[in-house]
Image (cartoon, helix red, strand yellow):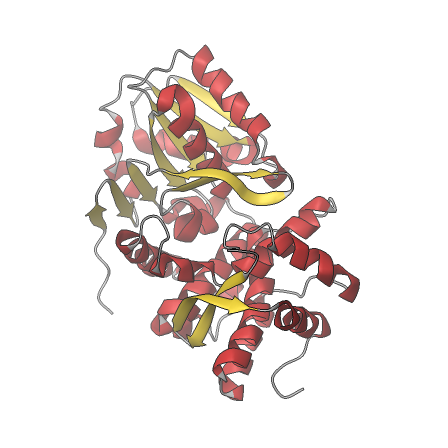
Amino acid sequence: MKKPQLVWDIKPVSYILGKDAVSLSVKRLKEFGKRFVLVDENTFEHCLPVFKNLIGDIEIDGIIKISANSNNKNIEETIVVWDKLSEFGADRDSLLINLGGGVVTDLGGFAAATFKRGISFINYPTSLLGMVDAAIGGKTGLDFSGIKNQVGLFTNPIKVVIDPIFLKTLDQNQLLSGYAEMLKCGLIMDRDLWGSLTTLNYQQVNDWDSLIVQSARNKVDIVRHDTHEKGIRKILNFGHTIGHAIESHFLNKGQPITHGEAVAAGMICETYISSKIYEFECTQFNEIIKVIDMNFKRQELKNEDIDYLIDLMKQDKKIKEGKHNFSLLRKLGKAVHDIEVDDNTIRESIIFYIEGKNCTD
């Protein structure tokens, strides 16, 4: 199989992917008078030393550390970043380097875009989820009032640098979380990628490099055509309408699960909905459910949670005039968006998930 090209540009943001991507980005870092690095507690310990080694003698003018708790993608942690930037003397010509997973790149991008009406930032995702999804596409966001990503901006970093070297710093939960987004990518738009993943438990993957590049390239192509999510980019929301509600539900209970675990649950529910609307073949439906179940355990939901989950969905950004608009599978490898789904069908899909059924049950 021909290797994907290493570097391509999509104005106004450029992407550098693959082995040695960090070292390839060094020239851009030198263009700024002051450089600050945003990390969380985990990337401070495990990734920052690797990053410093890769950028050589480039000076860092300040390290900003936030909590590694995924619950803390909020305005309070953003204020910590703004305070530190002020303390370090950051100005409009400074650069913020977001070195971390989705929380760091989401929160860091928002903080940079709003500090002094906007300073430049670069995303260096260190989690699998960040590499294939969260750091790509110019979305920044904070959780607010118990709802995921209620506050945020579309604002592009000047560069996204994806280097699989950071995968060595991840625990299994974080690898698994990113794997959900790779499965989603295959389901909605890339049957070849899906075929590469269907026989594998995530622990059996050996060639992360090429799979990451393939997944990231798919998202970049979508974002290039629909930066502000007015059309085709909406298909990336497959699994996220119900998934975000499940994620918020456990977050509000003080029992947070990873984003990938929530999206995996959402994909099972939304595959069920897709099959009801588009009449999937039973074998295809079961294949999708089997692959997700092979990698992700079912979350402990109860029938009495369903009304609350539907209420949470009503806070979703995709709600229009009180109607649930889903991105669904037309068939394996092909998704459609803005499909209205009624509450009863949503309820049926969650019951299907709770009861652990498949197409033949």
